[in-house]
Image 1 (spheres, rainbow, N blue to C red):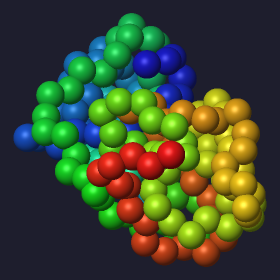
Image 2: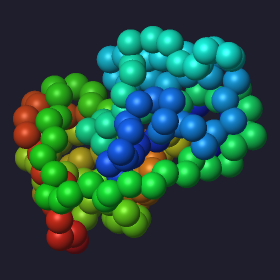
Image 3: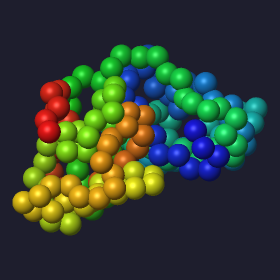
Image 4: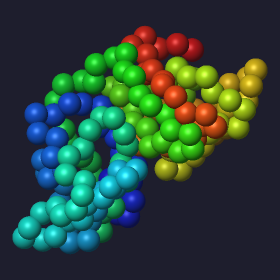
Length: 167
């Protein structure tokens, strides 16, 4: 975890998916917060989290802001996400999780979908763009479990994270 913003996702189903339970292994401080694509919650010393975002899921990615990096990693125990897994890509940007337990190439790990010229895949620090007849091109070549991503598509629809990787 970084001080400042870190893009994260969950590839496990925990017994308790409440924000406080999921982030309990971190040393939190006032001002820390976590956002989904549509909601957020802030941490208050002596109280815990307060905001619209009460539970986390493995259906989307999140943006976690920590005031310090005193907790180098998030430790979770749960059941692996069941694959194949269907997700919805919005027209425009979708905050996308990585359901895999190991790293996978973008080509193999991006959900099956009819990508169009100019669609984009972004991590916190890198990106790739889709080119008809070629596929993904750019410095983002690998999807990492635990990291959050954003995908931008011209036309939204249903997409599937495959149980068997394809290259």
